[in-house]
Amino acid sequence: MIIKRYKVNSMNEAITRIRYELGREAVIISQRKIRKPGILGFFSKKMLEVTAAVDNKKKENSDGADMQDSIAAIKKLVNDKMKNNTLCSDIKGDKIIDNGAKENYNISECNYEKNIVDKNNDTIIKEMQQMKNMLNEMMKGSYGNVGKSAFQIKLENRDFNSKVVSTILNRVNIIEDDRNEEEKLKEVVTSMIKVEDKVLENIVVLVGPTGVGKTTTIAKLAGKLSLIEKKKVGLITIDTYRIGAVEQLKTYADIMNIPFQVVFTIKDMSKAIENMLNCDVILIDTTGRSSKNKMQISELRAFIDKVNTDNIHLVISCTTKNRDIDVIVEGYKELNYNSVIITKLDETSTYGSILNILQAAKKPISFVTTGQNVPEDIKVMNSEELAKLVLGEDIIC
Image: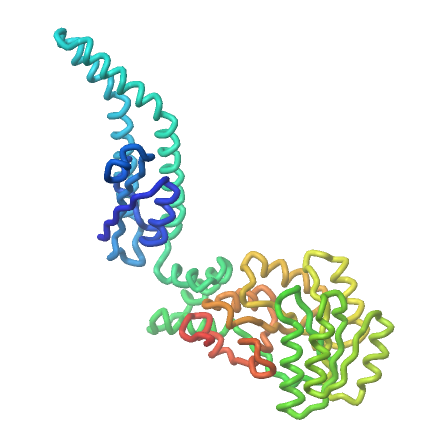
């Protein structure tokens, strides 16, 4: 058991410090108002002294019984304290009436204390409400794991969404052999990751929302194909909306000495493709569009239909929030992408979103990007390597 005492100005400040230092499972044992030490402290505003505790030996798969007991104890403490405060003046008043010799003095003292109680009544109610809100938050954080196995909690901590967790648990449970859960888990996750490792040729289009790194990714692919695989590569961009996008890709094209064209209209697209027919691979960078804007997606589809290719990659960041993944994946299905490129693996420490993306898209993964270096930081990873990442057995340095 770890017990710490905090001197703060408000309950909100105490809760923030307790959660930061002791975690969400910490409980408040007591609180009281104090003055700063010294003569000056007598004239200063009172501070709040809060005592909190946490059980540092609590097991990961605890069913929450200890937390329930702690919260029940806190509620009892609060109720007792409030009861004592409200009855204080009445009890003294009864004693005063029975003692006639000191009746006037004690009644005056009791009335004085009653006035203090009345004056601070709003403050007490406010603090009680703060404690109530804190208890509700603690119940959400701690009781959210009640009834869950350590195995399920571990999956959720790897940032898998609820659908993926459910799928994994069901598949693990139907495996009937003597292997432990970890081995079964690795087999299941590996089987859920499909990798597309095909040769890039003809026309390749990258689509995806803004900010996921499409332009940098297409520059990495161009560098990989032209500098490493010694193929003749052409670059086309239709991203004329974003400031600096054309200049950025043109700079990469100049460095790698490969042809580059900007397309403004669908008619320009036909001419650009015709001018690059001698290239082994033509890479097309598209404008980032909101997956929720159907008109913009339809406009983008008109350009893609014109190039007549089935080599379309959806680019999506590994840092994308789980609640946004389904929206993006569903919105871009109109473009008929056939694989996924997941970027920015270097910008996160958990990789569960990789599996979330693949399960939502129902498409294989073609590439991952792991940094800003062109063309080094793009690679094809097999299912086993990706499984190690999403399960926390490996990291991207």
